[in-house]
Image 1 (tube, rainbow, N blue to C red):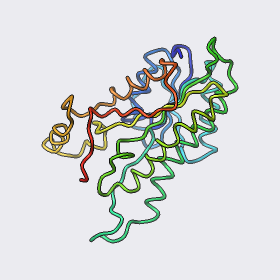
Image 2: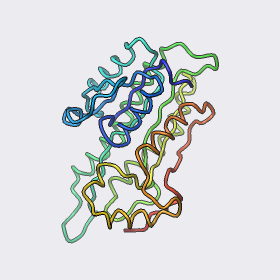
Image 3: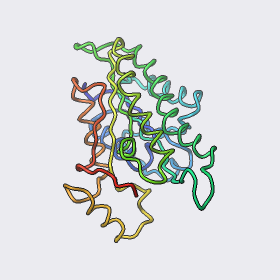
Length: 252
């Protein structure tokens, strides 16, 4: 799947993994529509080739508007990368009380339902495009986490949501195969995103030391590189790729 002269949607596109992916796609000649919440977009830098679109990924009408904007850009909508997500921590039960049900619901709604919402609406639009010479129309790259497999203490909601994204990969790929749309998922390990910006350098180094090799934190650019590799590798479909330096998370 070529990237040049296509349209791409990247959710969570104003910061972190999404911002790096949006920049990489734009640098390769795609018209990128970076979908994020209004507050995040206000802080995002202006980048050639990137149009910021305010939308809540759990809102069907807002996402449909963003999809229509991308599909009507003059380039065929071929690429969707779902990076929007949250990762609050809370134990199921403990000294601080019982896990808040609304928090659990919110994490699943944003991370899992939001991913599915964007995928279903974008896939419908991609399916209306003309296929390339190999019968392909597009590719969706979703974001899980190593927490889907190695969820730590306090990650019940996050791990459940990302496990859902991982499990969604194969049936989604099978569902959309008749439309010429591939579906892949990246499961990052510990990535140096804004969520880690508030921790000490000592703590960050401790996290890096726990990675077998290379002994460093992942970067948003690592994620973006893998996302673009997936887009261009036509035989990758229906699989989850761990991007974690062989890390297996301890209980805490």
